[in-house]
View 1 (spheres, rainbow over the protein chains, first blue to last red):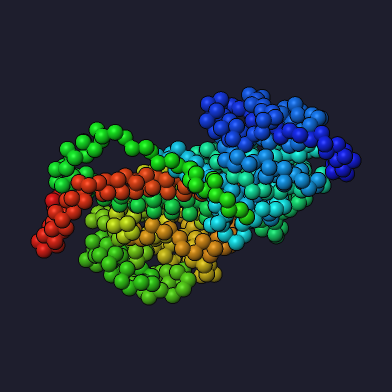
View 2 (view 1 turned 60 degrees about the vertical axis):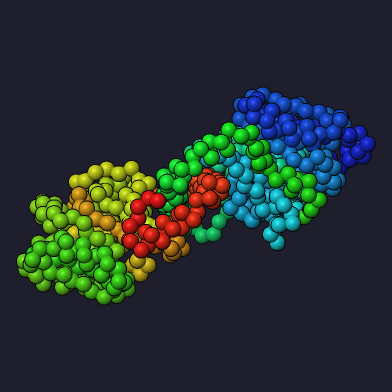
Length: 332
Length: 301
């Protein structure tokens, strides 16, 4: 695209850059209110513009509509695209973003990224930064903090810096990207939009970076609820880039690759069956232990005590988010 | 005469599982061909086939994995019934139609009363291939499970296991395809069997993947239609790679969901056992455990 050079010319207008805007594409207003809106209000500055936009179709199309709204906007310092189910947790988010975008060549910033990426399954590559919590509702709910959620406990490979792709649940776009790059609506409804966008930004000569901000992603544990759509998107993105930036590349002839991938697929399915059997056995063991507690004479004898305990004023339910970590001053 | 054969890689497993099953199923004149395992499994099985082939009165040869226990007193009668059709070459307790690889359990599964007994997590028993949608036998299949193979005399004398399959996995699929190539059919009969095995279905995934590839190489065009040209292979590779990563993501999701389910129960158990009442009655339970140990009874407190 070559838009990087063109935009170097307008950097002189830096004095006009004053506002960080936030945009969301909304299909479920309640989810937006409970997740994204809370984070945006925490992160925004007094002059920040917030654009919660009802979805206009695929995420590609909806995000393009947001980009069209902000393109050419005087005073735009960055546009932050936030999934309706993502909550930014850093009150100093804008300062972090500003630092990351201070380098003119930076086009995109996120808090989860990877290198060595070959497909839309970027998590199969070498992930360098994953500063988020996956919060789920199933089975009584819980949190799955990723490896750089708490930097003081992060592995040696965790770092912020240049990456090949970002997870799209929170994306920070520089003004030049807002003006010059669009999501490719031919790729489908949802999957692969973030990788393809990152590739376009890099193709235009700009950098994609991770930065030290954190977010909570409120999502179910199912990663691929629509496998056929996901597979179609995987193939489309591989065909589109066809080896450029390593996307769709792989060792061996096409025949070798087909046979190996087919074997790997069935190995993955077998491991899933194995996990399921093991989990069923563990569940059975726990149910036996639970039955032992609730069917014993001592349990039945002490039922009045538990009744009294239940009648007492409720204790506060423990908070899921480790808030202490949110306010930790540790960093990468 | 119905003969029983086993390739014994673990003497203890054979003694505990296969042997009692063979004793239950065998008839007074049954011959037992228990051979020490020689790698690969096909080589030992071929030795057993050679030995069985010398018997002119052979009605069937039953190859039993050392961890497989026949729990069916009517086993021999069922075998005779299944082999009454002279077109039938192999009978099994589980199998599939439409198998495209050594992972035959991903195809259209036919399975009778086959149970898996495991020792982990306090032990237990589940239906074998519990994840698959299974059709009840009897039914003709294309591939049978190698845990238990019943061979007709014609097969014993005319078909051999491929000893070049050094990695072990998929020997049953290969043998099944050879049987079909030889013009005989395969059946799953309602044979009652228990597999005594770990919940870990496989402990050498890399080897399994290599075996899968070699089998696809050997039987390409039979197991799956082969693309006509390079663009055809490219399309197949692209889709296969996409499916692989979807399968991995789905497996990861499933694993997370299962962990969450276990965590939920662990929380509940912890809640129950951390109550004052539970702690107060701990001495009572301790006493009961001692009493049960002394009397050998497992009754409630």
